[in-house]
Length: 184
Ligand SMILES: [Ca+2]
Image 1: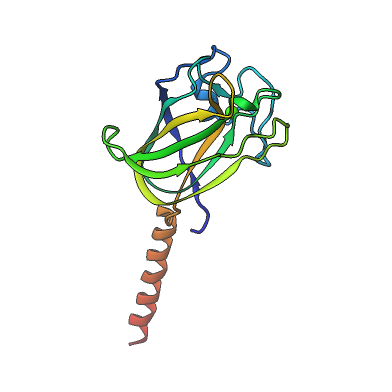
Image 2 (image 1 turned 90 degrees about the vertical axis):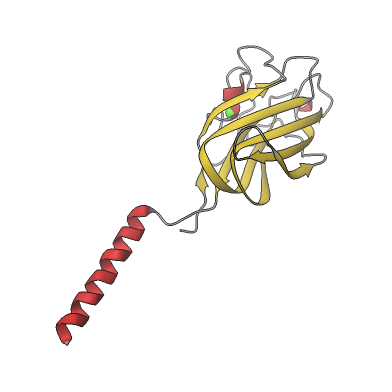
């Protein structure tokens, strides 16, 4: 208990396409470019998602492995060196429990542009705990680039006790009951 858990994203789709095969949607949910200190690299191919050129608005939909209560979202804006103006500027975050009907969670305005440096640590977005199996970003604008993108997005769930912890707790309570019975 206590630490939040990183949620597995099983699929990402978008109405905005991909700049090329070097800038696929999956590159923002597979840990590409992230090191153990939470810094995202600033190179080119295989590290970030960038939309097709000329399309800086539209939606991105993330499918989670199952329904979670989401506590916070860590977002690394588009961090390719010299191209951080492809970063996403204004967008809304929405949630859904069926992948069809979405509700608003939060709207972000002037979302911080990435540094474009190799030690970029991204942004921590606290959200009022919401239950969702799908999350959608409705993107309105970039920071001036002819497309929009992100380097990485990580959803974190509210921590719940591990089943093994509950089992151990039950065993412990069982022993207490056993000794109490022995004393009478
Ligand atoms: Ca990445």
